[in-house]
Length: 87
Length: 418
Image 1 (cartoon, rainbow over the protein chains, first blue to last red):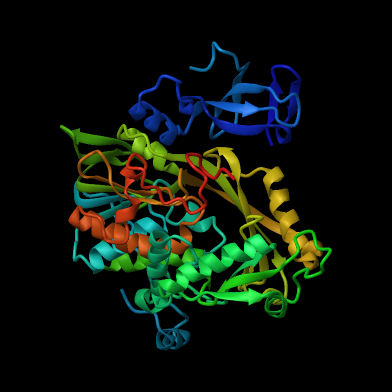
Image 2: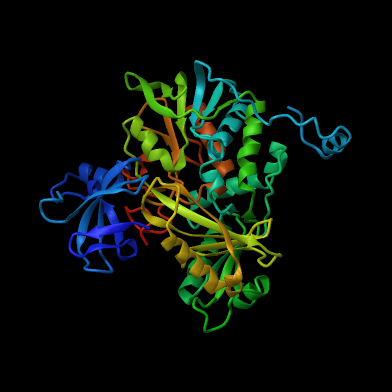
């Protein structure tokens, strides 16, 4: 199990968190239909580091972006979600 | 390649069983193949076998980065069934199930297919309505399905908790009697031996690191054992689909997640069928060795780790124990996990890619093992002719942009959202 450091609550067990989706799959409000389709239905899905949106569902319920390695599970950065993070 | 037979075994008894030969060669890669299949799992090996057997192609290689059958072929719960609701799915899986029934004869290799019955449990009136609808859809296409009453379920599986106070009360079930289990390793080894004897080069410890392009077309692959030219290249790498397609600059509608399974110590026969609950997402069966095999939900976040998380394991076991309380004293002896490429409608992707000469077979989510023969057969057709087989035409990569998803669970553009 991973330990995820919530930007608001500090280090907590992964059991309190729910994975939502990757940052690259958030559709911009003004996206063209083609871009929206591509964003909704395809992923980089790297065998390496990616930015993921997680939620501290069973804690403070805040959203955050977790930068995590998909093989080692190493978390290199976590930041709170705000207007400056998402497109 | 000598055929395996009871007579051969008997004859071997008189000379110390010294007649055994390696079941496949260990060749050096050639500089050119007509068709290269990336991925030496069950699907890739089956594809190579049918390319050689059915389409008469001779110059084929299967490239495997580790050892054959070491990925998801060796990391599943070995369940074989075709009880899907949607026509493209149950047509494809039923084609496969019919092949399973003769696979040991076809390969001259015992895949230990055991059609002991695959039973879905219904836990509510709504569940039973859904199961009846699914059974009807299957029977309309000539696939066996029987709706079961509560009493019939209790009679088939006396150890299920049938009490009214059960955590997950059982109202009935839907059984496909021709479904069951098979021996996973034997499937990979049987296809490998068959393909090798037809001249296919199975090259292990050979990871593809890039594609060689001529204009838009793929003309070969770079590997850890050097450059290999190819007429056509077929990707068949399960959880690594996104990674390998990425080497060719293609973004796929898949997300790789970990799926775990586990097995207990061996005990006397106590479960007669494969017990599944789709409302809970739980699969329980007893292996021929006696161990109780559990499977559950994937770890629902992206991972290429091939190792699981105790949280999800606990969830699967809790469901199993609620259904069959007698399992509570068994010791778990082994757990494993595979990387599954979860597609966004839950259905596989087989066919062409936007890159010329490059084909894809992936997105099998957690349902690939049962499809091994059908996947190999249809993918071989696609690789040999460059065109989809009638059975894999609905599973084209561009179905998402066409709005033609095959969405068995009806969940929309997220892998496995429930």
